[in-house]
Image (cartoon, rainbow, N blue to C red):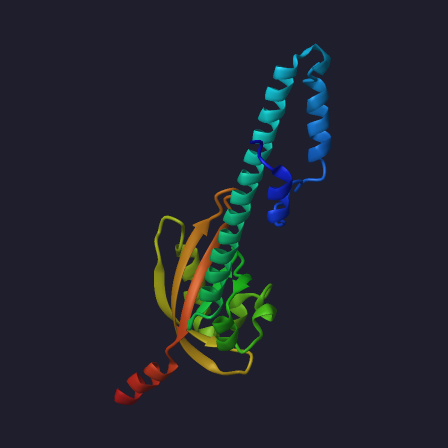
Length: 201
């Protein structure tokens, strides 16, 4: 019994058989180059050819289903990681070589007292208190892809004018394609702890 391709296609309306507009054009060109002379073929040969084409079409549909499933799984994983990043309790920032913020999570925006989207493109050094500017500069310059993670304490001043003592961890990574360096920073507010320490002393 021949596979019922029409029934399979109706049963799975999510299959995208032509994701690229030029695919059909390319396929027709390839078909012309490898043209089969049906007039020279016997009826048995034609039936075998039709069967092979039907099986090949089913294989393509199954491969497309698997690709769609893999894409859905990747999207789900990406969304899950995005949620973990955005809703983490500590601030996450990504800086370029000039200390410009290229990515930030919600906690970072909260600590800096500015909407997350409005942190992008701003210099992180604009939030570093004068007393910690030199320390941060040396910290970033000494953190390289081979140096490993660096840690330290900084004094920040957010847009509300509040001074924050923060504990910071920094790592540097190089883009595998371009070699461009990025600095990943996590920081958390330790102002209460520092005040308690000052009181005890």
